[in-house]
Length: 342
Image (cartoon, rainbow, N blue to C red; front, side):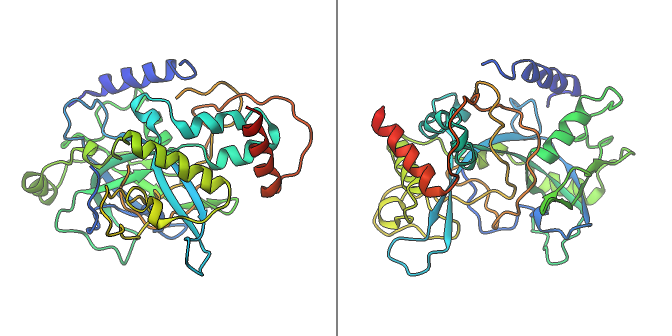
């Protein structure tokens, strides 16, 4: 288990480098849906370390791309469907979707579309729910829950870890700290910026320690998206193009690979890789500098939009462009004409 000093050193190194260059099987309620708590409410959780001894942090980071579709092909209901695919930049590879999206930020009239398809970051943690603001939430047999946090909450966690007044890791079994998730709203979106750490250190209870002894810690990497194969990368790019063109989701063509939440895989063979949207929503980075850098991530219900925090990773710099309409048809026409020209 890494020490607090190790974590601080790695966070500082990551901060200095900014700008330079198995899935969950579902079926249980191990994921704690903090995004469902009522506005003005708060839940108290206690983070636990990762079972992976090679992970210096007590979380893992995920980068996902959301592909919206205008309904499902062959169905009358044209309700928007959302499919989530992993961004392969998580593995240090070039993402075929972001390679296209980055070029959009060179044109100011395409920025909004670029943000829509930019990768979304989330962070996976584990721990106990000590005070639960969700009246209808049932604690599973294994009370060690998993938490999917957006950048708002993560930045609060990260800032506290860098504070020299924090002497012990918040995951310490004897001298750890609780974290209070506080939900408010701002500009019509859920806001978690008033979430905070407890002021006093506490030890795990006998019941919590017994749960750890019985169930053990999760290896958080087991719940990360699967690394896409070459075929899956081709499917992702095809789905992306269909999404941008405003076409519906094609179950027969893509259902064996990536699907909307709750949709069963087709009985035609192939690798099933259903995806669901994470619980928090972030926007693409502000296009001010050159950008640097599963699928079944943790299951979660339809997300509540979260006000976007200041971006940690900038998207490509914008270039002057003639004024243009912001309608979807105009944007799509501009993208297609650029593709033809190239």
